[in-house]
Amino acid sequence: MKGERSVQSGRTRFILKGFHPYLVLGSGEYVVDHERRLDDELADDLVRITCDLIRFASDASQPRQMVAAMEYVAHYLSRVPGLYLFHSKSNEKPAIVATLRQTRTPALMLNGHVDVIAARPELFTPRVQDGRIYGRGSQDMKGSVAVMLRLLSDLARLDPRPDIGCSLSATKR
Image (cartoon, rainbow, N blue to C red):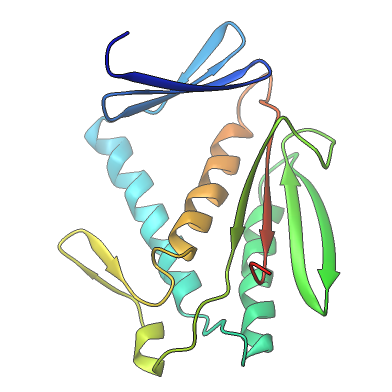
């Protein structure tokens, strides 16, 4: 189809048609509905999670803040029914692999981190203006981590569950 891009991994295929993402699983299809009521709920949740993560001054000079940010991530994931969580540490920095199936090596693994470059304290106070989130890490990469958390939560409701997981760490190194 013209204007369609897709990525295949095993039986799971992601398709982008215009601005409407679809997740095709085997013979079924999961469609991200762009009705206003769903957009509002999804947007509100993503803004909330992103702003919560921005509030952690999780730069290399503040390891306790990095740990606290990862504890937030772990708490969010722990509330997703049936999610498989694998916790680890490297140099005292926590990491989590979360999968929808009982494996540490799913067909598709998304990666994210919660550390940021050091900044003035006011940059860790998120601000939403004109539909955009401003604050340290809103784009790299706390906003993306928020999307991954919500995606896992939504995909966990599917039957069968896709072979997808997230590797989330305190630092990208």
